[in-house]
Image (cartoon, rainbow, N blue to C red; front, side):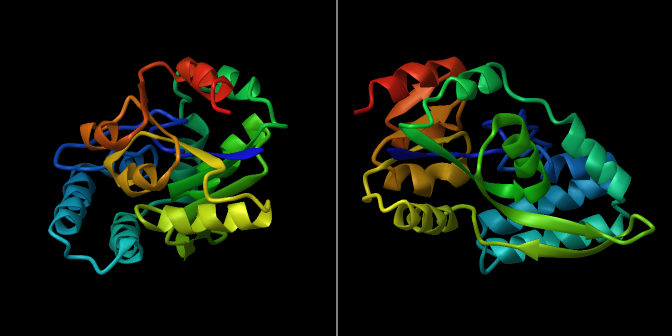
Length: 224
């Protein structure tokens, strides 16, 4: 058996890229768009800071973005609507429903939100998911807290090692599927990586490049 590691935002679900941003996403940028033009500008500014290495780590970038969400009044209803209305990329559901679970154990590892990963878990019968951010809202629907995990960029690799250890697999027993430049470190580390409708930086370091998610079936079936 192998671990099938799947990115979530941009890979399983359609993502957007606001002007001035460098990493596309489904919910992070969806929130900025929902909160208005000034929030979009400030969201883009966090990407500039990240690109210039102005944040110490991914956690600090998320915290800066969360402050924007608080500043412009992100509500529980807006957040839940974004999660509920997220659209799967074409052929994602049908392709993953055909994966032989005796051969591959799917694991979601996302730099996005736990709530979106949980939706995919429910829809696709996936048992394991790690996501970078989870939001807590009070009884008035106001954002009042959050939980953060460093599971994006290089941090994704640590969670893969955890799952390999738990399943008593070796370091070559996994496959990665992703779409963004934030997936470059994990694609470089993967014994087999698949870039889906990907950023050129990810295409350059991946084993396979696909435009249709259904192409993943043949890749997995041919992987010994």
